[in-house]
Amino acid sequence: MIDKFLARDLSAVEEAVRKAAAVEIMPRFRQLAQHEVDEKTGPHDLVTVADRRAEEHLTAALTRLLPGSAVVGEEAVHADPTVYGALRADAPVWIVDPVDGTRQFVAGDPNFCTLVALARRGEILASWTFAPALDEVATAVRGQGAYVNGERIHSGSPEPGAELRVAIAHPLYTSDHDKRTLARLDVPGIAARPCGSAGLEYLKVARGEMDGLAFTWPSAWDHAAGLLLVGEAGGAHSTVGGVPFRVDRDNELPFAVGRDEATAVRIRELLRGA
Image (cartoon, rainbow, N blue to C red):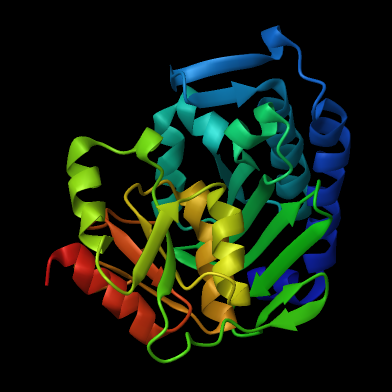
């Protein structure tokens, strides 16, 4: 069933993602009222009416396209953490972040996106990264490459000896322990900066505009789409335990992403303190 879906209905998923953004997100961009923005766990963890309604829109549309599938969305999991368990079940799962970069969205910054990935038994099969304010859509299907607005992209490799440009988990969202671990990247040859929208940072690595990423949190909706996109563009990723990050299990964190395997390994080994 899922193979037939992947062969036949990918364009319908992109259409659903675009429609959710057109109906629920973009009309509210730079138009949010104060009462339409709430805090979840703290002042930097924001949710808006656009996040909630876009996720509801996508949940209905995606399960209609693939009957029997489940949805693990950021806002649904916040309301009921047991929803996350669908990632370990047998049914196909849509992994949804309706507005990745809500902080940027609230601030009127166009660098946010909608992330959708389709997974089964922990394997990410397809992904969509849509930045509606930038008019860019990145897509990937396992074994079929990565594309932006229909053109294939390749991550390539850093120039030999060049300083590596690495986006790291933003200090607003990291513990003191995480900060100490990420500080291991403060070495010659690494130019680290805080990340913005995780989905757009993955896209930059897939395009070769950034060399790597280092993340300290496991939320599947932030990583699933980007991990497949980078992998299909030629990149790699690894947890500090030396194995790939997976959405269906507990991972040894942090984990590293690189535009090629050597870069991912270098970042990982620095994070390990090796």
